[in-house]
Image (cartoon, rainbow, N blue to C red; front, side, top):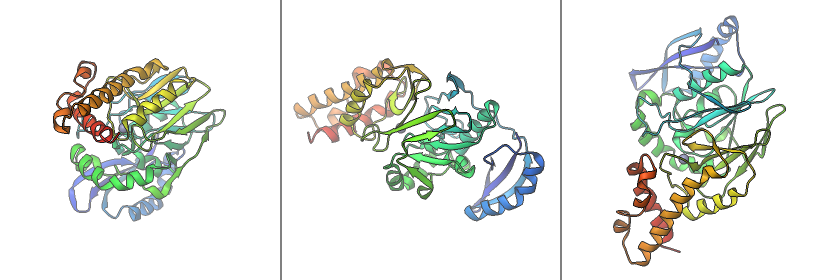
Length: 348
Ligand SMILES: [Zn+2]
């Protein structure tokens, strides 16, 4: 694997630098990489006036591949950590992976930074040299999308729910600032919220050669832009963050919508589900029961609190406590979920 490797520093703060790949769609030789480097760097620099190039070289990158597991034939998944984003974990928090067809590769979710995406690319190159033609983003959250620029630089088509561009545009500044504060300025170099004009929305199928992935948009549930993917060759369903296991769910859409989406999905015929967080493969539909129980409990306890005249600040002290022992990162997410549920359900 020979790639163009750049070291880029912030124009505004030249002490903050990061080394990244500027890969091509196809695998290239050392000579081809060197022949094209000048033109590619020039084009790249125009797109990134905020960065200065400190070094550039064509070489085998010194990047540790993300650990991946083949959960079904040609489907490789990496398990994200159950942590809050930090400079050390670089936002490696979501389950991300790739599907290999006869002609092309589709990546499903880009990880929480350019570093995570590049580690995924190195893992892909250990499995196949086929071009990465597609990146599907299951929804807008930074732990799933901040690595997207890598695949855009490779010329991959970015496929998302039709609501995602607007949802992301309205949050881009907050994500850039708040998420950036968590993973740090160095990790944020090239870790951008995806540029909406380059996205393709509403595509129903992707053909990887001998393998079709089917995409389906979900009405507002975990977010208002949840996109699921199904591979009928292996019966594998990517639920994105419609399904959480182990890691406390995060409600950023609608609790009633999410429960309704899971009720619908329960009837869907699949052999396994790939959750957005938790084990990279679970049996279906059993794999959704934990998140379903959690959301049902939150909804029921919130309705009881509202009926008893409790204020929001009273309700969030106890709503969800019955679920505490079953989930990791409970204190980081539950109060926010209880707040979102109360705000939604008080108008029922
Ligand atoms: Zn999410």
